[in-house]
Length: 152
Image (cartoon, rainbow, N blue to C red; front, side, top):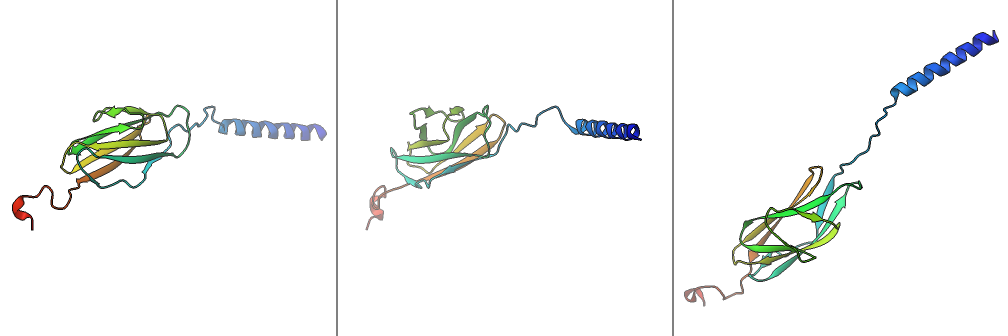
């Protein structure tokens, strides 16, 4: 009787072991791509030619993976201006630049008196993209840049 109970116990343990091992996956499930957001402090809306607007940015990561790389680029659809980062690099439109800090500043300098619009894109090496849009209006002092006949 003891031999039969030992055999049943061994068969039960072996069945449980086979069941557990067959349910296991040998590949580790390591998440590499995490969502992220790009947040900014409020940015001025009015700007005149030659003036620089500061854009304070924070990259908020949904998780950490050591091999995640971020790039930044911009496109200007209206007006003319220059965008540079806080280490002085002047960006060329649509060229990608490495983003090495989670907290950084961008500086947009107006080169025209027209309305200006820029789109800033931050992308990770897994294809996730965040886009920010900034619009600047030409700020004119009252009475300036108006034809003489319209002044009262």
